[in-house]
Image (cartoon, rainbow over all chains, first blue to last red; front, side, top):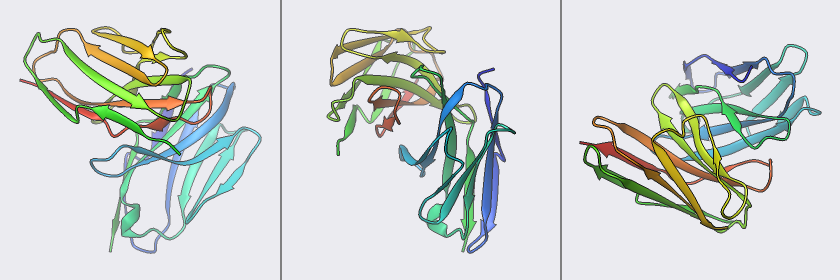
Length: 112
Length: 111
């Protein structure tokens, strides 16, 4: 019920390539979703928040897609650069609880 | 804007010792959280507090106490540190169920 499955755990791409990280969940009462970025030795930085009524959100160099039917959330980096190398975490909030349920994270390495 | 500060940045303790971590935020957020981050296990919620003097258990509360002394501060106590324990403790805050903002973390090592 509560878990968020995040794939892949590790991802290595070359500069300029795209990178896709996916999270799946089972709880149909998931209303808010978040993507966080954590650079080595640093804390979590909010990248994007997505509400259940939103299906596509675009940021600087990335797109977040929410497929409510398949209960899948994805982060797509369109042209990765070395500065994107970090750990990425998806998270969701259910209903009116304040608990964030995190995926286990994806370590992305972008080779120059 | 605002900031979350955590002290200390590094904490080294002995087995069985009681250790306290502190967190301050100036966002004027109502809710504060403590998470533990272990390599390969993601983030797990220890305690959270929705207002001053409130305390709610998370998934990992055993072995910890917490205290919300005032709106801007939330402390976490490791009641008896376990040998070979190594983790990063992250404090966060939010306004209601909105996005959570995280502090820089306290890295704990138990000898």
